[in-house]
Length: 205
Image 1: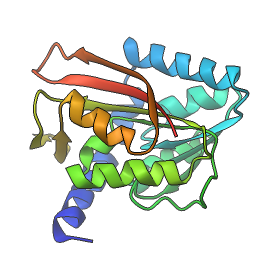
Image 2 (image 1 turned 180 degrees about the horizontal axis):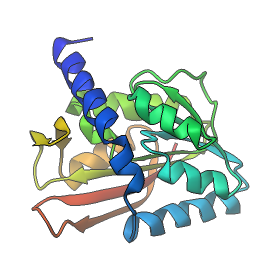
Image 3 (image 1 turned 90 degrees about the horizontal axis):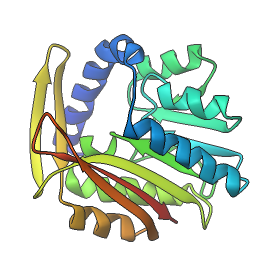
């Protein structure tokens, strides 16, 4: 593991360890909730009984998945987030997106929202490949990340500390996801507060 990656991961653990209670109180609304509901409908239509979430955070998505009757497993880099999810009754483990502690083909579906953008560009591709590894052939992989008009790397700082972001344009995101399967759906919508936009895709592994 490179020194840069170690530093980025330590920053993320520190940031999200301090922020978990604030995140838990946040109300997710709008398109993200709609897409999660549509993904649950897709899993039901395909009679898929469970999924893996990479970047489980404070368990907001995980709780919704579990309430829908899905066998849920979450992983997160931050021990405080995993502990919070476990207090909610969710199965969660501390793990990196680059080294998932599961055998090949362990899951029928996967979901990751606003997580992979905290990895360096090359590591994002590795994380997508790692997600595909733990999925069974034909499984749907849902990926949501912030995007930008051109590849960009930046450190965002607020009261909780520093976070690294690596964003890219839609064409590069499509190319990255296409390495592990067929993109069945790709959407992007603008952010009212910045010049960035959100990228959302479902890939059939």
